[in-house]
Length: 322
View 1 (cartoon, rainbow, N blue to C red):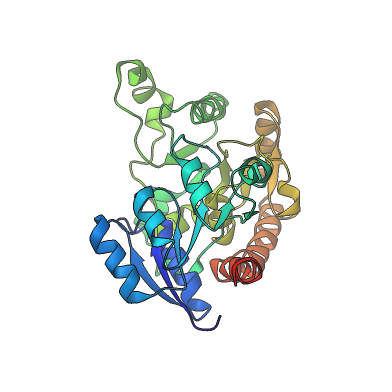
View 2 (cartoon, rainbow, N blue to C red):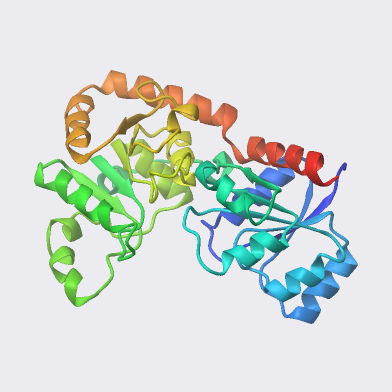
């Protein structure tokens, strides 16, 4: 396998979709990427037959399972599933593809029951999309805070603990701003929207350059992965924030110390009381925060970019499928 062709079937609809980062990672490794998202059965099969890709990479259910099964006659099928939650529709895909990657190491054995070619491949950071052109006075006023959180505070069960944690921070009277989708407008969320949590909302979904500005202008970047009990199920947010130079303080995820070292490259906490204690400890210690964030950023840029991650993916693909 040399300079081969890949059909990348994932979302490119928004500028923050991971598909852009995957595409960049493949191209930096010298591979030709043809991005496709949604096609009707006949047209997609015709594209596959005419392009003759070395493999198709999907992330979720971008291609109908029946169409995907037909594609298997012409090329290899690979899936890199980016979530720790397992929906009902996923298992048929796991069974169909030739090789399956999960971002959660703790789920490898579960997926292997359906596909023996299952491997852990964690997410990464694509620095080219997060360059800051300039920081204006308005940026400083808008994006600066002592504590920041970027993520979803919606009503799904895995997001509810985040609301509780951020309320704990606000009740301790720390200066907090959070960014992401707005709180869902429901009767039961009215007190949140008009309360401390709603007032702490930065007002927008930040991504790429604005995400990087929040990382640079916030003293502590607070993070909560949705399934911290699942071993090494860290989201791309960790690599992105640390890669942007944030001082990253997160809820402990099992095995995270094998990826980034707590108290040297990131900071972790086990419960909300420890979170508050560590915020109090690190907030006034600018030099220590800079030392930790610099070490974390250097490691991410060295070991956890999508250029590196795709290279790791290709090695597994070569060993297993070709």
